[in-house]
Image (cartoon, rainbow, N blue to C red; front, side, top):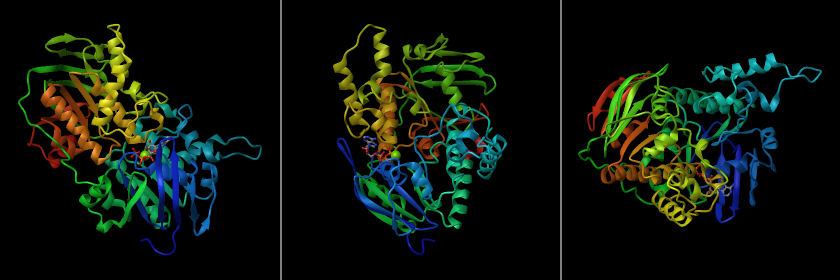
Length: 495
Ligand SMILES: Nc1ncnc2c1ncn2[C@@H]1O[C@H](COP(=O)(O)OP(=O)(O)OP(=O)(O)O)[C@@H](O)[C@H]1O
Ligand SMILES: [Mg+2]
């Protein structure tokens, strides 16, 4: 598929941020009609390289050539005029605008008098979303959309510009399987038209499905470039981490203790219906469901973020009513939200971001100790290999995956006895995944924490959960003990 002369050449691109050599003389190229996949651990430099191409960052040195001609651009508008369109890992939508306004933002249709033709704005936005096969109200305010809908709107916005070089930075991390299938169909159609696509992902199983070539980066350098046919999973993992992974899914199977959380007939209209279950001390309870089955609502209701209509929750056999997250935190419950970015304080350092709820928990007791904040944060920075390991570095300067690890560290630091984690490995690289699972396993098996693991990644839930409940349309449809379920059974019960 990759034939003729290159569409894009990036030569010896170098970029240093204060304290980090993010890109060390990187070479990268792209041919018309190919999907060039860019892989690497969190913080490897993938997003930085793409931001330089899309004009939102400037390289310290190096050259960029498009169709053989050197280009100089230092802002996204000029890059867009050259045909470069980028779907960012952190969305760039304007939350207060409607979906249609966001999609047409770069090029609002106007009449001769210069007035915006609103009918045309809505029609164009509608058309593009229709090609993506998604049903989103183009008049809705963007902030009211789910993460997946925002992701699709973001993709639609870039496709509206008809780029000849399309950059996708982790486009599928928030999408359901059917949405991923549609996106891949669109990518294939763009390929046929000769568009070159650069695709960043942490999902290694996407490589053979969509890729032409793969480039692996580590610590700001290119480790190698391979055709997809030669890029099997183990080769890629060892290129990414520079060592063999000890164990992808560390799991201790042990006898769980008494229930820490018990839920009876929980209903939250209109999404959750009559849910009864329990989580035991030291148990990892997996909840599997396709996107939108209600699993995230359940997490929110348990944590006091959404109201319940009826039912009863017990903690340690005591009936409780949790109307607000502070009540949940006081009862030593923790929740890792699916929408990670929403819960970080971007200008603050790693330390305060990790210890935030812990501090508020202790502030209840009137204590605050900055030294211990640094100690606790350093511990988790090491455990989860958060990079760069600087307690005072503002989180907004971290790579996407490292920001996710900060959110996770925060809840691990609260000393929660009941921990709910919603898609805990979204955006996290293979090495860090193993570390996250190692921590969850230790919390359960040696500290007796009861964990609810909400996940749509079948391999991880099958490997890590002591028990799996399957959810469909707000109800439980099946329960499996460890070792009992298979991917087929999960899918069958979920759809
Ligand atoms: N604006 C910035 N200021 C300071 N440092 C930055 C900035 N952007 C990125 N970095 C640092 O540069 C390095 C590369 O980050 P980059 O975002 O390119 O990683 P990535 O490969 O996209 O990782 P991920 O998979 O986690 O998204 C990281 O160490 C990151 O902390
Ligand atoms: Mg990134």
